[in-house]
Length: 127
Image (tube, rainbow, N blue to C red; front, side, top):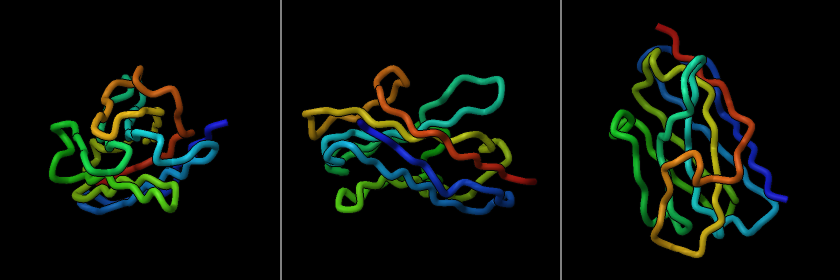
């Protein structure tokens, strides 16, 4: 059974940084392409960043490029989202997601692409 546990959220001031972590279990971690999404109250879940199985390729939503960085450590079964220059508009629940894939070059950006989801971690940016 695949489980994803997200952590690292919290309260941060405008301009601050946070690093989110998502630990996976139940399957060889390098079988997964991974993604991060977020959802603010009353809005749809939005794609933020994705990374391929090996970590060799990444993709970002335009509105986080240059501020957020996705990475993974396959030895630790963990994917990370480093978030810098945070703004109040970044306040949301952040979710990690996983998809088993045989491709070493594909990443995935749709919520429907991912069958496995973490429980979410709240990020609040104060002005």
